[in-house]
Image 1 (tube, rainbow, N blue to C red):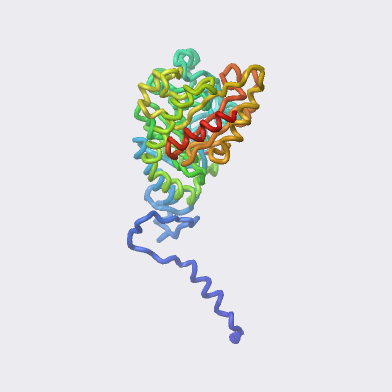
Image 2: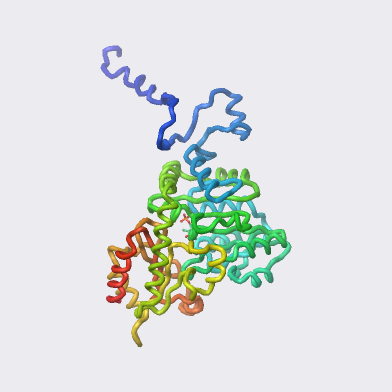
Amino acid sequence: MNDDPHNDIDQICARFWQTPRVDQVPHSPPLYLSTVFACDSTEQARQMLAGRQPGYVYQRDGHPNGDMLAERCRLLHAAEWALVTSSGMGALAAVVLAECQAGDHLLVGQDLYGRSLDLLSGEAARLGIECELVDTSNVAAVAQKMRPETRLVVAETISNPLLKVADIPELAQLCHRHGARLLVDNTFASPWCCRPLKLGADLVIESMTKIMNGHADGLLGLVCGRSGDAAQVKRMTSIWGLTASAFDCWLVARGLSTLHLRSERAVANAQQVARFLAQHPKVEGALYPHLATHPDHAVAARMLGDHCGTVVTFTLKAAAGEDPLAAAERFIQAAAPTIPFCPTLGDLSTSLTHPASTSHRNLTPDELARLGISPATIRLSVGIESAGHLEKVLAEALQAA
Ligand SMILES: *Cc1c(COP(=O)(O)O)cnc(C)c1O
């Protein structure tokens, strides 16, 4: 046995698990992929697992990359507390699981993100939580539906794809008069355009997969709050397995470092693109909250000022008797590959999507028409290219449509 030239390999390999301590501060944040951390003593393990002492034991309960990112988000949102989750949907799930009980009633914006509606009106119902849809851009309509057991009102700062703007201060006041709490999905705004907690909201969620990361390579969610039970949200995240991946936290922390620069450029571009589209003869109507023609322009001006997000929605003018979908198809083909058809938002480069065949594909033609979405409606997520380049590409694609 002793003659075996490989007989010490297993002992060498065993030492590989002894991680060296680094006592200097690295200039860029390290990535901690370790799923588990060594405890110094039984007493330390007990204290950390009980949450009485800071530190890490097992990755699902918390990890350094998650905490570092959450702290940055807490500062951006001027929040009391912030937690990251595996995705935007994970954030919504964690809030519902932490805040709601069977018998509770929820008032939910009828044009919320499709998967959020699936969760709130489908999945939550299975847990005995009643969900009622309402137009959250109409505060009087929300007031009429308030009940003593209404626990949460759920609204999006800027909705998809009509870019309706929720009046967060008014909704928050209404909620607080009735003992309910306001949960805002701020994905389409990001804290650069809106900080809902400062306007009175109680809880904010975001899909950091979108604008917060900005590089379309990480899936992540955020929950933050002004008050409320952070420990319970954290508990739900661990118990239901909604923990954020350390690698995605590292990527999003990196993307977040340029949020202000990306947003400044993309929002200015979106303004210019919206004005360009609004006056173009091949466009029937352009929607952007900064345009005076947008139905929610007054609320947007008050709440968002010049920071109205990076999404612009418009409908192509189809020739008389022509199938509007054909015009959309021609536009999409002509815009690619410079502006790809990618159903997301918030990336560095401009992309487009077609609501009638993606986010709103399950609606009937009548329901689509009632909302004002046509088969010729295109949603643009404006990126950080030069505005002149963008206008040129859009002008050419409109010519072809
Ligand atoms: C994408 C999105 C979500 C879901 O986020 P994921 O990170 O994809 O889970 C929720 N709300 C809005 C408004 C979104 O755009």
